[in-house]
Image (tube, rainbow, N blue to C red):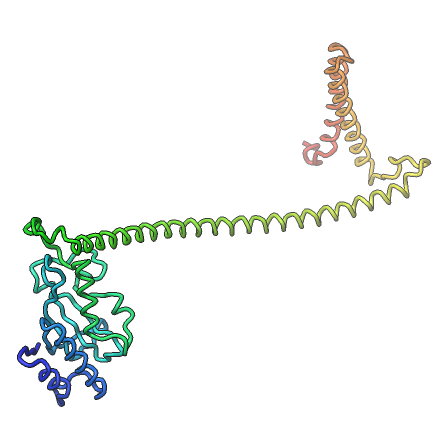
Length: 331
């Protein structure tokens, strides 16, 4: 990395307008003049920064030769200075510069989970995020970084040697400390809120799944209701047919049993046995109810039930014997 601290303006001009293999990655002449103007203003306002030339590697692996400003920024009179490198992007000023805290040149480690500086030293701030040409420049960026590091210093450092310093109880220092405490309190509240939002989102997803399941169940029940309604309509049609048939054949002069005809003697016997079986079943049910109500004594109830059960058994046995296959009868 080439650098010069003797004449920064001359160094910048020579670097920007150099041609050939030593040329930088800035192609537009108008762009070069804007970069010169912004860097000159930066070094005039912050003499602790010096210009340098170096190779910068982007995240996609592209390597470019760029100008940078590096040096130490005094964030606070109680805190160590912050070594900083500001790379001038090859598409500056349309693109914001790239800022790194040089942790390797400091005896202090970078503060873990710092809101603006990651472990590699890459630095972000609201000023960089809303960077806009004609409204933003390098001097204002550095001014913003100094205020930022005064409230949130990027390094771990011990304050035990300065606990008795009078400025510890000054209004400015107290305001800085309160601002830092408020910032981290807000960050903690934000983290907790994000966790709650994530939990609520999970609950919402689960409720949506349950809603979908309920909706599917409702659709299935509605489909089943329609199916049952169709079956009811079919049964009503069949019932109407039976009623119409009864109206035609049940005229009083024709006995209802005479309407049904059996195919053969075997079927006729089976039908008579089944009718007698069902009749005896109904009679036993009536006897059981009469016994419970005290109309029939226990002796009479048991006698009648034995007679009916014997007759019912004979009728059922007759049906079984008739329906038994012929090969069984032959055996």
